[in-house]
Length: 134
Image 1: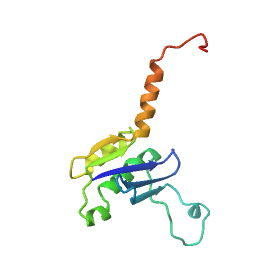
Image 2 (image 1 turned 60 degrees about the vertical axis):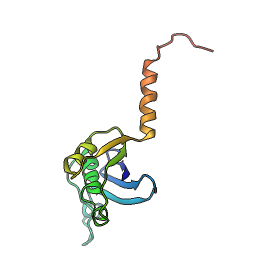
Image 3 (image 1 turned 90 degrees about the vertical axis):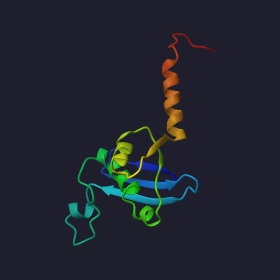
Image 4 (image 1 turned 180 degrees about the vertical axis):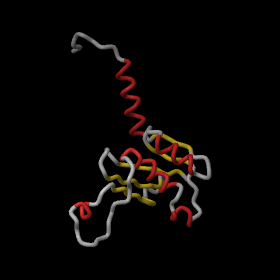
């Protein structure tokens, strides 16, 4: 099964991630991480605290990836095995998933990140012109 792993963090104290089926486009599962709780900071009355992460924001990405791919109850109950992940070129999440996955995981770069990387590399190869070309 080929799945797409989307992770959005942007170095904030919160992060969210979705596991999406490549063919169906359906969200199969999601994970969230919060480093603090506003209600706790304000000394609020007893409440359901949403704080669920203590480490750095950079560690959120691999933690959520491992939860979604390796410890996912929905995938385990349906006896579904993940063989390929589509994502960005960051190696932190794929190395964490490979460390905990029972089977080998193949990684494929998504088209948006591949296009951007190729464009940037081609741009770097072009010579710098001192004159304007009409």
